[in-house]
Length: 615
Ligand SMILES: CCCCCCCCCCC/C=C/C(=O)SCCNC(=O)CCNC(=O)[C@H](O)C(C)(C)COP(=O)(O)OP(=O)(O)OC[C@H]1O[C@@H](n2cnc3c(N)ncnc32)[C@H](O)[C@@H]1OP(=O)(O)O
Ligand SMILES: Cc1cc2nc3c(=O)[nH]c(=O)nc-3n(C[C@H](O)[C@H](O)[C@H](O)COP(=O)(O)OP(=O)(O)OC[C@H]3O[C@@H](n4cnc5c(N)ncnc54)[C@H](O)[C@@H]3O)c2cc1C
Image (cartoon, rainbow, N blue to C red; front, side, top):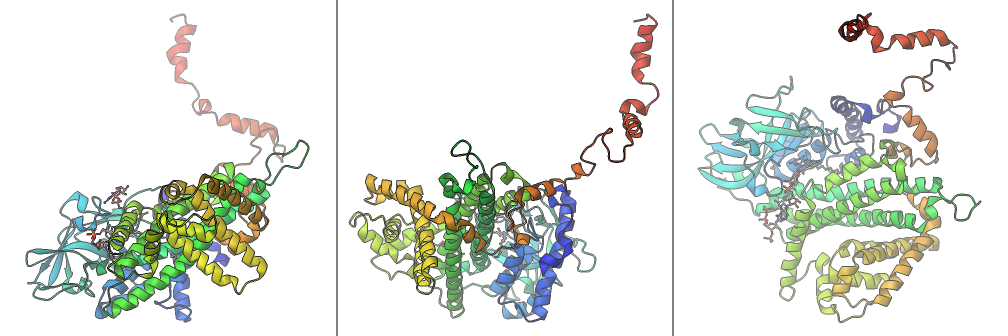
């Protein structure tokens, strides 16, 4: 439906100014998200299953550099679902769902992003008026980054330090109106604006926000987990981290988002590599498709495998997320730390790997990959942002490490949850069991090293399961992908394996051979494998990656859209089609700045005195 809308055509975004980009993004987002509303009216989606629809739209490339409405769907609504009590949900969700209000999520401040307990914005309860007073005591207390907050949202969830009866109870969430619903003017006591140009996501309208003793009703504190009663009494949550639920949700959906961008990037680079020919193996021979070079296969094929591995893992993570949330509703908090550790780890690993793979795909396309029209630079801008937002990757990995170490310390005293059950065998097998160059052997090795084992074993198990129902030919290719993913990472992480497992020099050599053989075996199916991601040209929006392979024609067509090429290409007074040679010569001559005034000042200052012998 979207690809038929002409609204997305027009001057490529990179030629627009920052302001025009925003205006364009609003126009396109309204067209795109009105579809969500239409689907809702037709009963094709509901608030409970809109992840796919919204995720699909955000990742569809019709909103190439992000959307100022993205946060409304991805964080504002999930935060209400996760943190508001039933009454509050009834009040706010229908308005948010039909977009009669647009929201953002304002947690990060100029001074603090990672250490959220250090946030400075205060929400002080005034029992006399039954209101909270929101205040930004310092410059570093200003909210900084929230998507869509600059000029788009009129509401947002704000995370602030809660004070009641003179006591601080730590950070809590509040729903806050920032702009008038009719005029869209910022409300008194609100200082709001956009933070400026960034490496990517320039259509997202990230904003800043400060409060000057701004008052909101008591009922605007989100009270599903903790409450402040009318007299100011504070009622604690069952678990202090339940308030972090929206972040956990977003970390989970980010893994899906990475699958999307990785599949796109590798589709573009693989198709291009099948079209592109460069260098002859023997003089006089036709030049080779660059996809035939083993070095090119090394750059690309692991991304095909990783896209499948991440998709399978994302699905499993989504199931775990839903299971744990159902348990939370029943009051069972046992698996919350495991979910947190899993979401942190998978968000960090998939975003870091995707960013590295997208950059490899860009490099694999040589000079043409550097063109904005290839879509690879924009895609890199989008995925590298995910390494930072929703928890900086190093910090998230440290959270997972903390959970693993804690679990390891309790190996003998506690029953292990499924995702860390491997720790027990790994601890027992370290150095005791020999190395084996099989997929299972590598996974066992990684159980000891404990990196990427979640992703690897999930990928392997799922492919084993699929193998029962697919054709023998497909089964073979799927196994090649698992093999490639495992051998690739075994070779990448050799130092860890050498340190913690008994892998020998000979086995490393044969692993290398096996890796190269797998690349060669996958080569005939490479284009088929990326075609199988089934991404339409309208979604790829790339001169290099279209299904028809018209790479060079598209590059020239795109070049012609540059405003600098708006004038005739020949740019010659002598060669124009209409033959008006002398007229053009005169017209061009009249454009000389020297002809703009009848007498140049140098005549009076230098030439005339010189001619009169006075100089
Ligand atoms: C397909 C769909 C399309 C998707 C499109 C995606 C687009 C997304 C756009 C996103 C835009 C970006 C938005 C944002 O960035 S919002 C801001 C996000 N900010 C962060 O993520 C901040 C990161 N920091 C933190 O999360 C925490 O501060 C941190 C976890 C690092 C530490 O928290 P804290 O200091 O409070 O905790 P402690 O260190 O004291 O730890 C105490 C124990 O609590 C455990 N813990 C921490 N967090 C959680 C949690 N969420 N759940 C459960 N448990 C948690 C922690 O591990 C400690 O446990 P132990 O004591 O047992 O060790
Ligand atoms: C594109 C984009 C969109 C965003 N959207 C939003 C939004 O909508 N709403 C919102 O509230 N926020 C948003 N953010 C903010 C984002 O959540 C934070 O930038 C992120 O959580 C990282 O925090 P920070 O910027 O304070 O980094 P810092 O924590 O200052 O990180 C800087 C460095 O310090 C290191 N570091 C920090 N703490 C530790 C530690 N304990 N141990 C070891 N190393 C450490 C980090 O690893 C990193 O190398 C967005 C950010 C970006 C880039």
